[in-house]
Amino acid sequence: MRIGMPLNYSGGFKETVDELAVHEKAGLDIVYVPEAYSFDAVSQMGFIAARTERLEIASGILQIYTRTPTLTAMTAAGMDYVSNGRFTLGIGASGPQVIEGFHGVPYHAPLGRTREIVEICRQVWRRERVVHEGRHFQIPLPEGQGTGLGKPLKLINHPVRERIPIMIAAIGPKNVAMVAEIAEAWEPIFYVPEKAADIWGEPLAAGRAKRDASLPELDVVAQAPLAIGEGLDSFLDGMRPLLALYIGGMGAKGKNFYNDLARRYGYEAEAEKIQDLYLDGKKDEAAAAVPADLLTKTSLIGPAGHVKERLAALKESGVTTLNVTPLAGTTEERTALIEQVRRLADEI
Image (cartoon, rainbow, N blue to C red; front, side, top):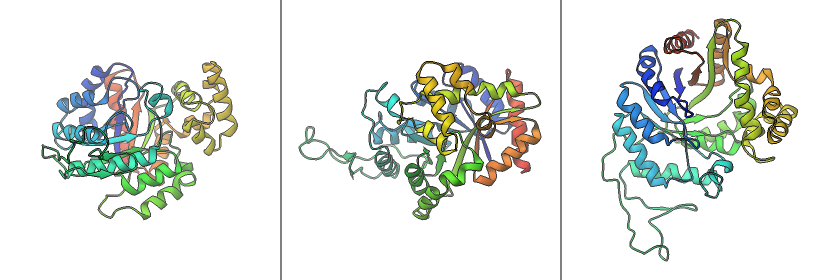
């Protein structure tokens, strides 16, 4: 099981990157750089590539609506070049609140767009002249659109790899089936290993049945906050606002993918209560309504024996990369957590 870590996009980026060389030596395998509606991820990933040697780097995630497919491919090839083949292209649909509210772009057809983007990226990386006649993208622009001067072009540079790994963030059944069919890696959110087979087993099986034999085994990337020790209930409670934000505030009634996921996990009444409170501006009450069971099952917080049991459950459910957020106040403490979870993961 690989050990990864997400970077915090809300501040302290340079300080976090200063730690990465230390974390790299402690056994960290991959770092995920989010974007959301913060600073762009690409400039930060280039900075990380210059400051590390072995550590893999992934976008976690670039949303699919505001970059053209060929620009996404160019960016990935450039990142793979400056990192000497250490890059994974993480993409995802995000949601209408961000895409329409921040970028002013219509949110539509996430599955179809994702599939076509993957096809175009791989065509670019193979240095083929890009010709794509899809439902959502036409390259070059067809007759009657634009100036009529467009012609098929291929990437000038020779990429380090013609098959850069693609990770897709997805939680809906159709999305997950598509990921299992076409991508190298899958990133769900708020992953509960005991529920994974019930929620995603059929979509994963359907996608894998269509999977190209040239693709490797699907890398399943699960996220979890990490703290190891006794008396850490305050760390669990510290996760409440984040889950409340996603379950309650990331979208409107009937249009919140994370609320839907909580309901599918079996927390129907709690999910409704959290959303009602959050949308009514009662964020603290919404956080208090997050089920303790959900906090425990989506985290790695507690004594070493408990954390090891959770790691075993994650591994048994199919997780191959663990994306942890070390909850500690100093570089030394965070590094020690990475070393400890690395040892525990190796023992299971």
